[in-house]
Image (cartoon, rainbow, N blue to C red; front, side):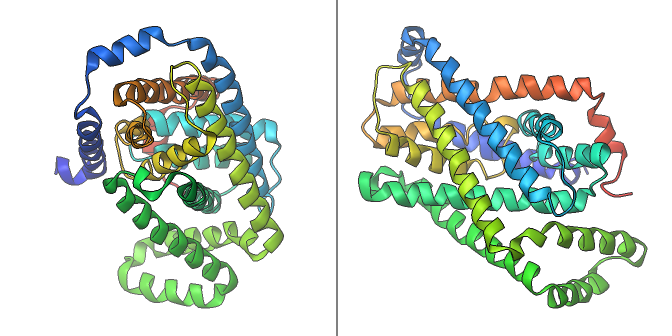
Amino acid sequence: MFFRKNWKIIFGIIVSAFFIWLALRGLELERVAAYLREADYRWIIPGILVYFVAVWARTWRWHYLLRPLKPVPLGQLFPIVCIGYFGNNVYPARAGEVIRAFVLRRNEGISVSASLATIIIERVFDGLVMLVFVFFALPFVGADHIPPIYRTTVIIASVFFFTALLFFFWMAFDQARATRVYRYFSGRIVPVRFRPAADSFFDRFMGGLHFLRSGRDVLMVFVTSIVIWLLETVKYWFVMHAFTFSVGFIGLMLMNGVVNLTTTLPSAPGYIGTFEVGARVLEALGINYDLAFGYTIVLHAALWFPITILGGYYMWRQGIKWRDFERRSLEK
């Protein structure tokens, strides 16, 4: 019973443990500690500032996606985005995505299902941009600079994200047929007593896909996604200067792409283990692995702590608690 109820959490922990094992193989912790002592942590400050510019850009992108549903001011969306980061970093199973949809409904009256549609589309575009980063970098650094085990991740991610995008485009442009397919399966799978709630969820979810019908909107979201991830790569570049190595910006784009494709896998909260694959990418680019690992854990901490603290503050300020999500259903 316990395993059946918590299988997502258990599976995420197993995945994280596997990647931690991969990261620790051949590592000399004394040398890592020495590199950490020698680092110039002042470089983290501009990196964090750039990162929050990227978070603001994410907020603008979500504002753009939500416009067909309701125009929400950026100043009101930014705390919700930060709360979502807090949820992903602290709670299991990427709960932050559902949490921010819940908070948006509470604050702005937008249904959870519709906002979840926009959040899922965000993640699809993020994945596509990560693939663009990887395939853009490969001619410059060579495919051999992606460790073999992570090449499989890139291939699987390519199939998944392109299939997901095509599927959502089909749903947006052929809503009548998508609805018929949904009704066919829901009529055979969903119990009768749950069907009205499921139908309502589906209808509102379809409303969240409306922007995909506009080529201009799709292009705008894609370009914004590129800007967001370039800004995050700039943070990688700033934090790199705290250490005694140098990699070209394109190499850091490759690292960013592989890391964030890997962190789409289920894992423990905060992407523990899956994020640390970045050290192996740097090792493949010729950087001493102990140094690369020290840099990666500092980068991970610089990405985790500031946004988690700010998101936790906004969550506390709005009087939101975890049990609020446990007690309430996604849709009323």
